[in-house]
Amino acid sequence: MAAGTATVTAAALVTDMVKLLGPERVFHKDVDLKTYTYDSSFVSQINNFTPEVVVMPTSTEEVSRIMRYADQHGVAVTPRGAGSGQTGGSVAVRGGIVMDLSAWDDIVEVDEVNMQVVVRPGVVHAELNNHISSYGLYFPPDPGSSEWATIGGMVANNASGLRAVKYGNTGQYVLGLEVVMPDGQVIRTGGLKSKALKSVSGLNLTGLFLASEGTLGVITEVRLKVWPKPPSRAIVVAYFDRLEDAAQSVLEVFKAGILPSGIEILDDGAIRSVNLFKPQLKLPEVEAAIFFEVNGSKAATEDEGRQIEEIAKRRAGSVEMATDAKRMKELWTGRQAIGAASARAKPNAARIFAGEDVCFPMAKVPEALRRIKEIGREHDTMVVIYGHIGDGNMHTAPIIDPLKPEEVEAAQRVAEDIHRLALEIGGATTGEHGVGFVRAAFMEEEHGAALTVMRRIKDCLDPKGIMNPGKIWAEE
Image (cartoon, rainbow, N blue to C red; front, side):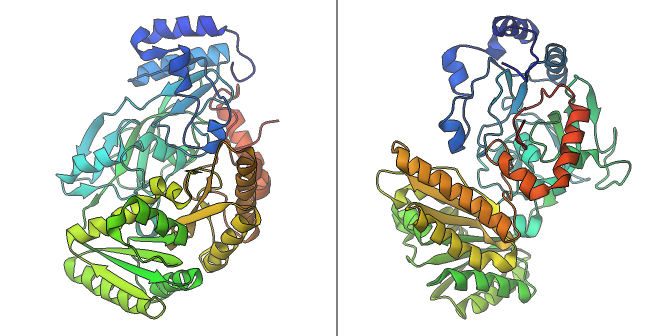
């Protein structure tokens, strides 16, 4: 049931959680637990990671009481947001308690003058931006799953996304955290009363909890830096007959001193999928399309857009620049739809999340794109490629019939080979989604002796091993 040292039965655990929270926020029936056995990862969908109980706290004190109980009884706790993750990070691979924080969605404060907000972990990314838009502010990191990704999950995985090339990842905006430790103690990082936009006071505990994936504590409040909204934007879409030409054009844009807010790629399979999903877009079916987004003042946006257009024309078959809001929305919809649309690339198939979000050095991106195609062919598996080419972060989507064991096995080999490719050419096994359960086996190879230090930090802060066990590193 738990981390290996539980001193309470499943029935008693449920009873005690009801006493702590009341029956309306404790779930233990089979049908309820089933909905918490998976996230978007394929590995969670072909396994059965079932908790004993699900709880939905909505205050720091409630989280603290739950953690004190879990610490006392050796019960595993898995924090969970929207469950949109793709690595098995929010499923209870060791049973115990799933702590669902998605309903705790208060925007506590908008400090317009100091350009920061304070939010609870269940606030959805898009809802935060909708709320602060009236203040002329926005939170730049865009995970692509903006309509359902929660801020708590984004912080726990240090998420990035569509505009990371210019604005970076979530961690660059986190000024401070409220965290409930495994023993129930509540701490604040970044200063108890700080309203500063930066600080180098003390050890960087905020950074310690970023990307910790719920293995060190429960994030219960986040203080975020936000930026003024850019007044203008433009999109340039270029279509290439060769993947290599597309990747090379991105490098040439950088060499020209231009830093777009976003640079996204769709390969031929992704383009076909989008056209099937949104036929009105009528994207040219070439080997690759690159979406460049620029923003800033109207004059700067138009100037940078025209420069990108000229650079892209050197290698692209066709190029389109859009500044009209309606057309920009249509074009950007093509990129945003690919996550759902990619399964259309193959009849009677499904897109699975395996081998997702590997990250390559920019100089190696052209080689990596071609080799991913070859890996798919070697295993007779269609792989759709799309993602954030501006920082080398590729999404590789195997398209299979999940009811055919041979296709499932082939897809798992594809994912293995893509991860190995990332390490082979000096990249990373994950650029934004985290390690979770599915990449734990690669961590020793990727980090070497540094993994031992990570384990020591974990053992120090969570000596009983109750916080999201089975994640980030393979357990002995």
